Structures are given as structure tokens and as C-alpha cells.
Image (cartoon, rainbow, N blue to C red; front, side):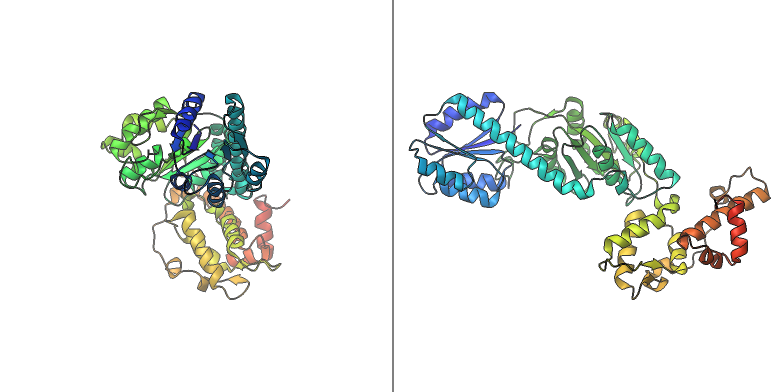
Length: 455
């Protein structure tokens, strides 16, 4: 619902315009002075301003100038009973959207308002798309070609086309928000807003206000009306990150919104209807929380129509070279022709670490290494000490080779994996891979041919 601010020191005009425009489906905010109007422009989510030209104190023309400083794209319609061509020209020079004289024609005013709102909507959408153009969150922005990630891509393609709620699970740092954005930007809603909120980062009161908005005066500090994330995401997608941390009382309100797609702002009585697809994520075991009455079962099943599990990094080690290359290019300031590489010892450290912080931790490590390195090769000395610590861990053979293989079959399968890993370490340079494995180039060539790695 679009919000229109009407400013006029003649209160009868405020009454007339509210009665005229309210039934058109707009939310009307009125004030009889420009100072309060400017405060609303700064603090409220407005879509259009209609202001009288001549008012005590700050004039309508001065208000127009201040509005353009604060929100240059907000359409402002000037209105006066003393219309002259000179005043109209001056208003348009100062970037007024349009100019209308009193007494005005009702249909003409409605048409100007409609066009102004459409223009503002398109302007906001074009800006949003322009900002997202270099980072569209298509599949290419999710780094990985391992089997677990290929499965994720397949699921994204399937769930993106539906309206169903998707629950994204996985440890912290695995990129759940990237997955949510991929679902949105590959869906029919891709040209509408993608809005996210971290449910674990706010208190219950603030979270309710952020989700559903609030009216002016709803609580201490609510100096202006504010639209919530559900309202801003209308027509698009809302991503509820760490939804498992949402307080139980607020879960009840969220359930009602998901069922009816309607709500009231905090401190308000008017019902607002929206069309929003909800994606949610959590690194908690929500099923355990449901069993322990920490999370509502009915809300969980409403959110979890489709589940998408993001694997931890140690289960997709084949993606480490791709991720490392991506982060090197991201953080390298000298974008020259020389290729920045990792030493074999550095690669070994990256592969043998368990990455409890997942992709986010790997990114931090690579950013640090790019800053600390002294040449075109990142060495183990450029990595944090905790990556280099010798770890005595029991090897889970069941994760390496199937239990139903004979010893020669298991050996061959393990040998093939080790050769592929050495090739990734060495950036597909066979001589370096052979050196890492402690074998000759001749043996390396023979093994690669044996396992179908050579054409």
C-alpha cells in the first residue's frame, strides 16, 4: 500500500484530500506545517508528497528543496491557489513532479498521483536492479561443483518455480542466504524485492516492529510511521534468517501472517494484506526445538514445506580450489597478469583442516593470506597457526571407501582420489602432482591413464 503525505496549512483541504484519496487504496498521512512534513520525509516510508505552495514558516517551495536533499527520487506535487506560469516553472526547475492549482479537478489530481506513484515505483525498481546487476545471485554466485553442490543446484531449480515456503538448514557459514537469494532470483518473483532479516539479532519488541512495522507513537522512540519487512517485500520474497531464535510469542503472530498473509502494524488497527513468499533458515536443530516446545510445531511445518540442506565445507572438499580462487580474486588488490598461487604445503593445510566455520572461515583465512603474502605464492607461513597444527584424528574409513569393496578395489579407489586431489593442489600440473605424491612423472602418467583422466 502506497503512503501519501499531504501538507497544507488549511485543514479543510487536508480533510477533503484524505476523503478523496483514502478510498483509492492509499494510506494518507496529513500535517498542517512544512517542518513536521520534512520530519516525516526523513523518518517515514513515504511514496509521494502533496504540498501547498504558501504556508507560514517554511514554504512549500522550501519544503520541496529540502525533500530533494533528503530523498531526491521522492515525487512531490505542488499545489497552490495562486498559480502563475512563473511559479510553475520555478517548481519544475526544483524537480517537482507536477504542479496543480486550487480548486483542482478531482480526476486530474488522481491521474497525476497515479502516474507519480508509478514513476517512483519504476525508479526504485530500476535502482534495485542496477545495484543487484553485478551480484545477481544466480547459480554462478554459489561457488562449487562437487556432488553435494550439484544436488543443491538441482533442488534450487525445482523449488524456485513454486510458491511454497522453503526451509534452508546447515551449519553457520555455509552460505544459506546465498541459497535463498538463488531461489528468489531464479523464481517468477525475481524482479520484485528480496528482503532479509536476522531473527536472532534483535529483541522481541524490535523484531516485531521490523517484521510488521509500527505506527507513529506506538512505543517510545516511534516518532514516525515505519513499514515492516513484510510490507516492503510485497510481491517478492522475505528471508527469515536464524528463524529458530525467534521468541515463542512472536512465533504465534508469524504463523497467523503466513496463514492469512495479513497483519497490523505495531500500534495500528488497520489490516494490511501482502503477497510474500517466505524462505527461512536456521543452524539449529529445529526438530529438537519442536520436541522440547521451544519452537511451534505448526509454524515449523508451515515454514518447512520444502527443505533444502546445505552441506558443511568438510563434506564438499572438492570445492575448496574453486572457493580459494574466488576469494583470492575478491581480495587481491593488485589485479595484474601474474597469477597468485598456493604452495603444496599451503594446499595440504587447507585440505586437512575440518573448517568448523565453513565457507565463511575459509574466506577469512584467504583474505588474511592475500594481505600477508610477500610474493606471488601463498605459503603455509601466510596461514593462521591453527591450520598448521598436527591433528591426530581417527580416520572414518566408511566415509572414504564403501565397506563392500575388496582390498584391491578399495586401494584403487583411494589411489584415484589421491591423484585427483594432488592434481587440484597443483592446479593440474602433472609434474608437481607427481612430486607431491612421491612418484615419477612416468608413473603419474600411467595412473592417470589407468583411471581415465587422460583423453
